[in-house]
Image: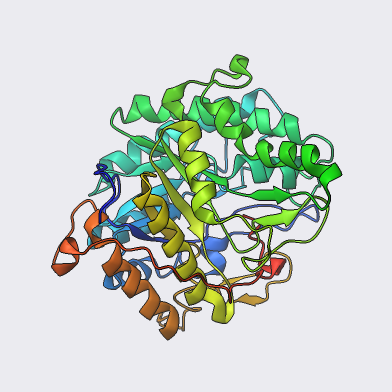
Length: 407
């Protein structure tokens, strides 16, 4: 059985995501995950490795803090190796233009911030559209909702404010809208991607039903603003909400003011339901823009997500892909501890990364399962039927939060 035909926007349904966070902590420490994972040095090998697994669509990042170290001046040298590596493999890249980081000389709270971001985004789109072998896609700002909370409400990282989450969310939306206009001016055929957390918040008691429902609904605020459905004075329009990316991890459901819950919990909502709600709300093609687990749970978590996606698709939900994020292990944000979340481990001195065998086997299984939904299916997989397993991965439990991914 097949779901209704949808023109796929991606070359591969199963995708690879390279961690590209560039946040700054209150103590001044700047993270640069493209550098700390070795992806900046070994982009050619990294792209070749994911290509061998059939992943022709990837998420990667442009590091604004490196590209734009002075006002209105751009140094693209840190980006060009990534572009060249993608070109060699014929990869389709979804480029994050701002993944929690911005240049030190720019005040994120100032009216100048959206203008400077738009100027940079337009320049990046001109370069990428001209130098990319396969037309790129653009995610202007990653996880506006999470950034507004982490950076504006609880001072977890930059800008390190408390009680200003709503203000920061509106500022980031303004910047994303202006950047989207600049991208479309530079590349009129460009596709825009959002990447927002998909969550579920549950009451601990019936008295908390209303509060939990309100907290749950807040996850849609950023996309509602971008599309002009909320706070229209920000300038949002439906055109800014093109492909809706949803980031989903084992820790994306919790009780209001309480602990996170696993798929084995009685309150846990199946992922297929959450996908259907998001797709129905916006009427757009959606995809899992980030998902992954840690340690031995990597394969079982992917199996759970893929089964749920298959169920959703068979119910008519237009899901276009699943991005493994991150596809390489990486050092934890707070403590630099090795986070074993990837298909590939840390690189050797020669750039070779060890392969996680069980995860690899599951990735290849899901590649075959969803091959018919690639933009350019090849081989026997193109004739495969999508099936939804009745089994769920009850063994998937909450992943450690020490590695920084909060969904």
